[in-house]
Length: 432
Ligand code: URA
Image (spheres, rainbow, N blue to C red):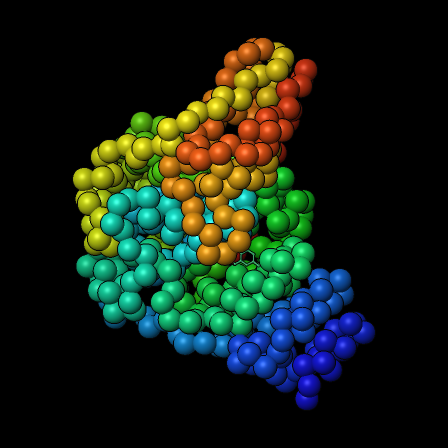
């Protein structure tokens, strides 16, 4: 068999066999398939699609393409959560300590930000001294002792996805439902979580613009996970405008700390508690009402903030830093309303503006400026009077196109726009 033949079969719209898929994935993982062959395969898949059976086989082959992360020996239910990528979405940094405070273990392997979306590891590194390259042994020890750990993978668990994702990122082949489903789920199946919650974004700042497409992706990923024996939950949530009010590493961590201290309530806090309650319901079979009340209580009592400080300290940071405010960059550019009216905010444009001022990456491996960020002063649907501040842009070096991009993120209209629902639908779950 040749990689060429597999590409040609997909080009000619023939469903691939199991042996063709396994051969292709093996060739990607061992380096014998070239980047141009991977690109051709991804483009043929994007244009011609895959059956659900092909997508499952692709996911399974990718999940088995590297080393397996060992399962910590401690008893109890392990939960994991994955978002398909958003702007001002720091739910993981709230959800993980909330779950750990509820007694649900979180062994969370996370990633870095790419393009206009932020990454949990970058945000966690905003706490001075925190390490996100825990060895499997240190990771396991921390999960057992603290109840949660958040780290990047230090063993190469899904090398096939690493190569395919890098090629997709530069060949306009990210937004394919079978390729996203296999990429996300291969990483989830390579870990050991019992309960997996997926947050599938739709809207302006998401890979899937239409809620129906995001739902299709969510259902496909749930079915792949269930077929592999995992307990799956998936929320389809809106990413038209930023989830929280802050964008950029330090700024987002400050917002997380405000929420965990009980000083702020918004879409970010509501979605984080919604996810926590869904996982608790699934783990313990309690009613929706009880799950929501218990999740809210660990936030209100400060137990979740204390858990975050334990996680930060266990990973090399200073426990007391969760009671401080992290610094923002020294220069401030204000975006002001050009006229009076109702505000519309684009998550995509603000995510790009943040990347432009150094708060995000143009490509993998770029350094990021943790202090660069954006603070929204007006949210989607709010009224602004002419000249009122809409956002503050904090930057250290050059503003470059950041100012213009941030200006372009706002539209002022005569009528209040109808916001789309934060949670469009929820799928999966044996107990919900
Ligand atoms: N996140 C992933 O891990 N993979 C994708 O393909 C898209 C989002």
